Image (cartoon, rainbow, N blue to C red):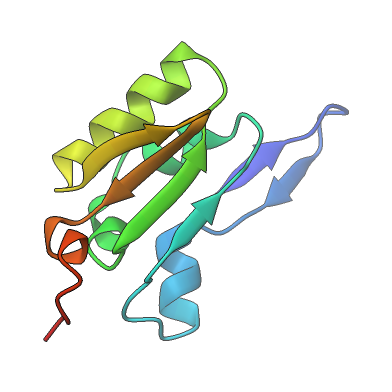
Length: 102
C-alpha cells in the first residue's frame, strides 16, 4: 500500500494485518488509535483479519464520515460501543465480563 504525500511522491506503508503478521502477534488486548483523520484508511475495507484478534479499541475520530466508518466496522466485527467524551471505546462482549480467553 502506498500513500501520496503533499508533493506527489508516494510513501510505502503496511496494513495493520501486515504489521501483526510480520511480528507474529496473535492477539491485541488494546488497540489505542489516534491517527488524526486517517481512521477511514484503517477501518474501511477488510478489517476482519486484525479486528478478530483485537479485544478493545479506543479511538478518537475526526469527522462524521470517519466516525460512521469506525463504528460500522467495529459493530460489524462484534464490538460493543460506548463513548467517553470524544473517545470511542469498543469492546468484545467477553471482555466486558473480565473472562479469560481460551
